[in-house]
Length: 301
Length: 307
Image 1 (cartoon, rainbow over the protein chains, first blue to last red):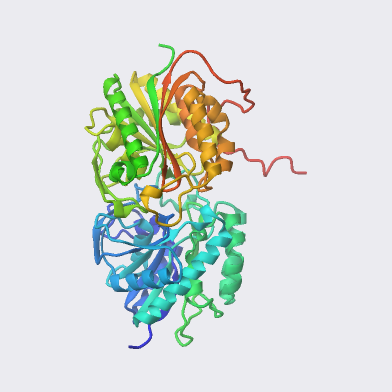
Image 2: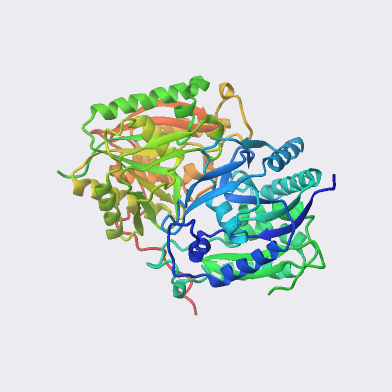
């Protein structure tokens, strides 16, 4: 069996607003659009993914929060409705997803062998979180690839962002090993915003773009610092400053997603493809991808 | 009537073990028994509303209030999914939810009702309502805990609840869903070996329960920041339930306190407590933080005082 490999890594933020703005048939709410910079970036990255041969998407989500280890979806199918507890007015999505249980079990096993506390989730009534659904829908609206969803163990809450970085790195390395042993071609998805301070009010029309801007300039400057480092292929440096960035901007990187993905990909020293940056209800959202294949790597923006 | 008719308050933990696996340990069983005592107390009361403030329902856009008349779903906990599913169908007091929203708005808060099929009611609220009001005999209302809210906003939210209870002429039982110390073990454990995560957490929990037992609710509210710093995992900005609870109940120490159970729930401190309004105050503290009647939002200071 050929060795498995990671064929692409995607930073894919999950504000439900982008799904709402797309008006897919699965979502009950209707919009007049909005957040085009993000959506058009997502659309372009989705087109790139159509040109890549892969078997499964593996997504690390901040909205399946676990405190007792890292959990993996462990049943082949989940079909239900996801309603965002924070923005129920815009996200009520009927989903029907398939899971690559073999790959999930392999990751769970290898991570467990490396000393990480793990658990397979096999309750058929379990509801898939809106982070998983938003990122996966925007990257693959056809939903024609199986997923592996990995919960986010909240080390930053219990210990510190430094411990989060260490634990997420260890999980990333274990997942990379599991992928290699599985023989599969996999797309990794780190589902989160960068800076993550929200406005606590919402305009009467959520998609009113005249009201949308970053929460404050400090958040923007930090976000741009990370984008510059990503463009320069300095992912080791990004991960090194991750604890400081996370604390300064109450970033959603606190869940460990970007650290997990970069560790799994060996901390790329090549430029990231930048697809778009825009605020959503004050938070900073970047769509980026890391393509290990130099021949297909692009300068997008 | 000089104030709203709040019959008593129940403080209870958000974890699912007392509902799903009470037989797994003596401690979980004792917590379940304590819920049962509260259930009976509610049943024997003249309550016509159960108002729940849940720390496991975070919100961002202000304060959300459940207003679906009959929310129904099968809930599964993120961490304890292996303990089983929690099917529920509740009866909500929509009229009260709308009055609470309006009262919150009139005190300057951002607030909205939510009434969507399939809305994910949180583990803490599901556990509390299934155990305290299993037949839906009394209509309920659930309010979220805004993740950015701090003391002033939370106290004003509590006062809004009082306004709505009074305006509607309800006889209410107030339920606060929250752990004491909230650090769980980060590995899977044998439930029979469950214990409070650390001696320090246990000592603080017992001190808090001493206050509860003495009916010193406003004193607990004033100690909230200290409690948060000492024994609360820093998931959110503050130990808000003490503020909301005291503001809703009337900001005093005049209660009969009954600590019905105190047990470990995967390392965290789970207590079931009853507070019933009484005469005679306890406590010797002086409070130097402002009382707040109206929420004016964040105070902008960056553009003031500059040369």
